[in-house]
Length: 515
Image 1 (cartoon, helix red, strand yellow):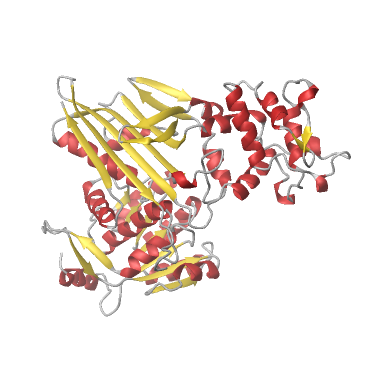
Image 2 (tube, rainbow, N blue to C red):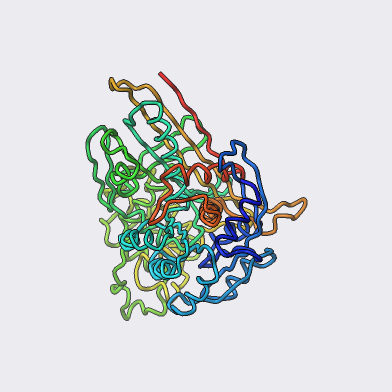
């Protein structure tokens, strides 16, 4: 594609004489990579019969709209062709005004805000891109979107998003070679880089931990060698298994089943051929054992802390230690000699360890000791008062302390690790291929020598923000012809997106072994 042909497309879309415009809704961390990429105007293409990838420059105006104008202004500061706008999504008139000025809309709002945006985009005949799962409500808009000749391109982040694209690339290639997928296994994790995994859990949050902890309590189901395996939510952490990836032996990881793996058989078109379909979340080894103990102790309990709101423990004086002692008091008794104090009247590690060792989810004394050390490292044994907003439940207390202690320090890197494994059989049922694809992305850091990278982007923000921006670009320049509610499952989408991501430094390492 040449710049001239692109300009013709833009003319047809009513963009003659001015830059095309992309409207981004939301001002969270994921927005900045999208704003920067689109405003830069670089478009990498090998489409329309040209076998060679090349880059052309077509400036795009980006409007970033947020409930709080100052948040949007902070994101667009210093970025050319980008402006901030204030928007309350519940203000339908204002929402339609902003959408009417745009050629493509990206919604990085919470998933429950997408439907009014999607309806307004259909009404105004605008394409929409999101990083969220296709909800049942969004799926119902498929016919309306097709009638309006527009696309709702969803699941364009990391997971869901890049995971779909990697999977379909591998599966389509296997099918093209005449094979059948016998086993599909996928692992994905957002983790601290090894140098930043410097706490007992080996984990850090780049957002409120409440959602991440709740996700760790979801039930899961998957297919393994023809048998359906179900894992109850309360057993999820206990089901974690150590994992070593063959091409990354330095990483000590573990995997936890990730929700409903069975649905991906139908989604990827392998439900009639695969006997194993398994998707899992990655953490560093040991994370789940400690989390299981915290859950067994009662720190995932969302019930009110009524036993502590008494005359002996006034709510205004509720301490972290009081919450901990209350939870420990529910466990079997141990000899009182272990209930000693040290320093500023703090319960001892020995006492906590002995109590935790009695939990059924605690595998051995070593796990109990590591969990006790984690409890103390999080400050859950301190005499400090619990903030008023966190006194509702033990879960709120835990989330507050995790949010305070498990955050990234300046210039610490996060890491995204996505890994797929495919086992392919021939018509005789014999294994003929094994495929792997791995994506390892580290967050950016400040350049101490040149100071050019003043606002480094995390691996998670790049792997979510860039795919949605590329999706918007493909729709803007009509590189994607499909209409309706879409996922990035067809080559029309995944081929250019993966190619552009690779050009931006987010590359897949692929390996194919034939037998």
